[in-house]
Amino acid sequence: MASAALLRACLEVIHFSGASQILRATLRGKGSIFCLHHVCPGGGLQTGFAPNSKLEVTPKFLEQIILLSRKHGLETVSIAEAARRITTPKPNDKPFVVFTLDDGYKDNQIYAQPIFDRLNCPYTVFVAPNIANGTCELWWRALEHIIAQNEHLKLTTPQFVCDIKTKTEAQKSAAWNKLSVVIAALPELAQRTAIRALAKAYDFNLEKLCLSVAMTWDEIRAINKDPLCTIGAHTMNHYSVKKLTSEQCTYELTQSKLEIERELGEPVQFFAYPYGDEPAAGPRDFAIAHKAGYLASVTTRKGVVFEDHKNHMQALPRIMVSGRYQKLRYIDALISGAPTALLNRMSKVNVS
Ligand SMILES: [Zn+2]
Image 1: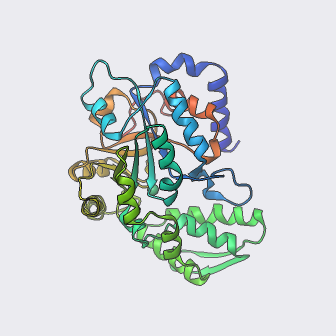
Image 2: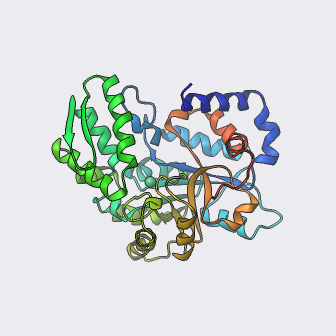
Image 3: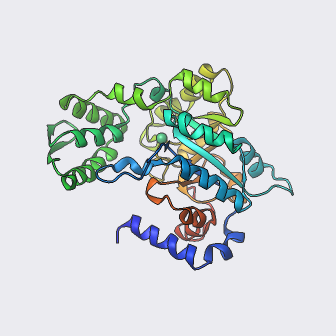
């Protein structure tokens, strides 16, 4: 069984067995931090070749998650309030849920902000300055477009060699499965060189892609005027920081903070590690985030937030909301803490 299907089956069992209700009281911890990317009509529901659709959810699903969280007695709070409840808890603090959106896409402002505003729900958008500037390659989206638009990819670069038919849907999926793994595994600078070579060979404009999906600085300033919105940092270039040297990692974390602060004229106190899983960010990077002056940083290590996280504020877990799991019963099971407790072998903190 594929891992996605296996996880879906686990979530179904946990939901329908009633286990999530029983376990909820002990395993849900202090709260949950959701990780989203795109919010747009039809998001994640595409049929055919659309490998990045997992990064999209519909506005309706976002609204349903907010309402479901509140139904379970979770308070929708800002990331600053969640950080306060973790570091300096008060007896009357209720369990919380935080909504975060990574990368700073235009659809956040067009489709997500009106929902957050209507439901009075705080949210955080993590911005990478060079995505806003249009100079970040967004290699995963570029690769999807290049495969979708061509019938054969043939290229030799110092980073990789490919000679793959991409005519049928099955061929496109197979090409994605192969090339996305090869490109993701490259060192960060080589990865960007490789996608630039592929884009050049197939006449694909990376800057146009980036500018078409990313919020401009004016748009970021506009969304930041919303009292419910917090802007956080997400590195300069959307690099997997664990693959960088300490100096490069320090630059990405400190410079992104400085540039966003300069653009917005206010402090930036929160950070999200790009990709955010174990291969993308580790203990060295958590220490650098602390030194860079962030109050808290979020990963995509799977889990809910427990009391022990007060000692690991630069490595908070999140729950990824996937476009391929747009069923409330999956979210219901995830915020119970039960699936991630099983995944983490009942360990509450996963920071090593
Ligand atoms: Zn990101």
